[in-house]
Length: 204
Length: 82
Image 1 (cartoon, chains in turn blue, orange):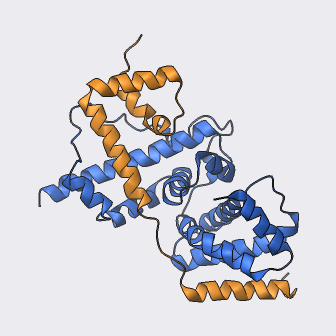
Image 2 (tube, rainbow over the protein chains, first blue to last red):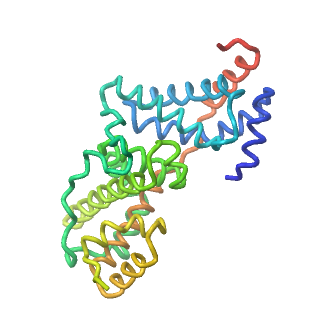
Image 3 (cartoon, rainbow over the protein chains, first blue to last red):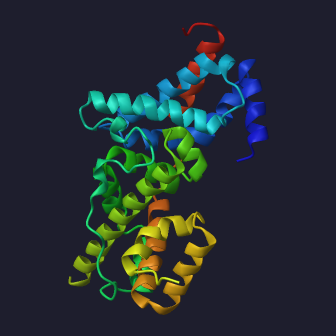
């Protein structure tokens, strides 16, 4: 999104322009709720966390500086709050399980290496169409929800919400390398789930 | 030059998509993909996976939420929110 326009929106917000607020809400609220939902138990709580995020934004708007983008700022507030809430619900393990040096993969590292080549089946044609038509939607959501929190956050922000790698690093405060490791593991897990799913439904 | 092994290639897929490989690595990946059908399929599956995940993005705001948020905003503007 053009960041220049977004800075105008911030300026307008500072002087109480409702239209500016509505524009930001329309642009981001749905994303905020979806991302929050990945941390907390239910939709109502996710909605609450997103609302709190807007209140925090309004409370802090005078201190907002153009150093980070509005989007990054919003998602950072959101993920911090959602994370805290999720931990309180004892659903998640702490985000700090990402190693402090930032470049080393977290504890979830030790996954078996994937299959040997040759057993990979082609998804071309029918399987691909089915997956892209949203047939496995619930499965994908459920799979993402079982991922370790840092992976869950990364795939949600990158692939569902469409943030850039750089934005995700800023939001989650992880290194570029770590971001890609987390994304890679998350996507690999989803791919395996889809592969199993296709294998099962084929035999029906 | 060392031939890239399949396991190595699989580990590089995300970096490859993100264009985060060195020129040499990238060359290695492309060379491998040109001759290895299994890896080529794996890469294709990863692309489908990403698009399927991207497909979860949708839904617009239900109007009550929007109205509620705008009401919060008005309260804030009136200085009623601390």
